[in-house]
Length: 63
Image (cartoon, rainbow, N blue to C red; front, top):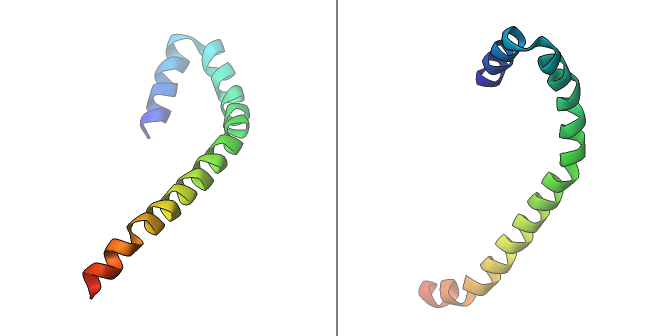
């Protein structure tokens, strides 16, 4: 909602820039999508490595 309100203010202040932002936003989103996917994959791998690192401590604590 906040993004929409900011866009409306931009539309009133400078409508050509607001229309350019409206056109470029989906393109920028598509360009950045692979980086988000890589970030999710790296986060998952780091979580798995951390789980393997603390596994011995969790096993010893359970005994």
